Image (cartoon, rainbow over all chains, first blue to last red; front, top):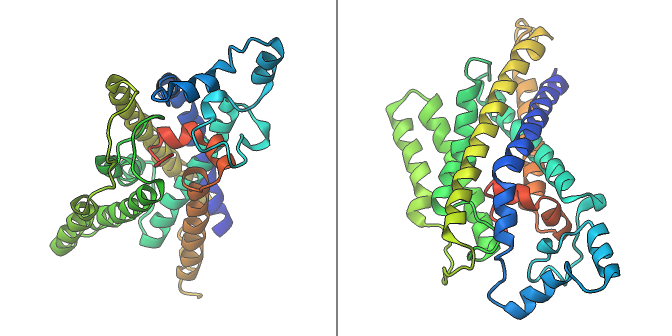
Length: 251
Length: 58
């Protein structure tokens, strides 16, 4: 029964991951690729060299660049020192698909785990609400402090941002649980306090906010990222509820 | 245990705890690996996913 419950969550996550990949290819990835053209443009020497390898003079270089699983856009500053590249030499698209499947299964298991621990089932009827709360906790509320970034955007120290982001997701999830699933007035107040706390503290911000990436791209990207993740979570919640109703209940 | 197994629909309390903790641990591990792990190979593979999910990234 335990295995069945976990498998149901994983299957729901994989389905949502495939859906997310399609949505990303339509709305988000083109903006990322566009932004990467501006990334690192501040140091024309370094940036130019990187990109010139694509339209290199030598046909051999061109062939190598074509065959290589690493597109030049991946070579971010500092990435040269460590070993980098895509797992198993996959193409950029398959890497994204794999990452979406893993992320989908991961978020689905987290959602199922919360549902099991709190004793509130995810059903077909309430699946969309579960999904919407997942989106609020993981995307919308953290985005208030750290909006979805395009490559080339100015940003504060990565470690600090990751800690703030992870803590905000945890506090938002706990706050939403208190707000949505507990009846007492005190719980609702505590929930609001938990949700507001990381924003009162403030997200790590970059000192210098100048960027080569056009602001219009950034605005389009933020909306596209939040819209596609909302669709992802709603699909995830509904599919989880559907599988729970049909498969897990039947067993 | 016999009383908690009366309902075949829902899991017993201890099963619920095991299933819930397992789901949270595996899920957390997967999301961490795809979204936050500080490895160049994982970063490059999941690059577009990290950006479009709004994970903090480089």
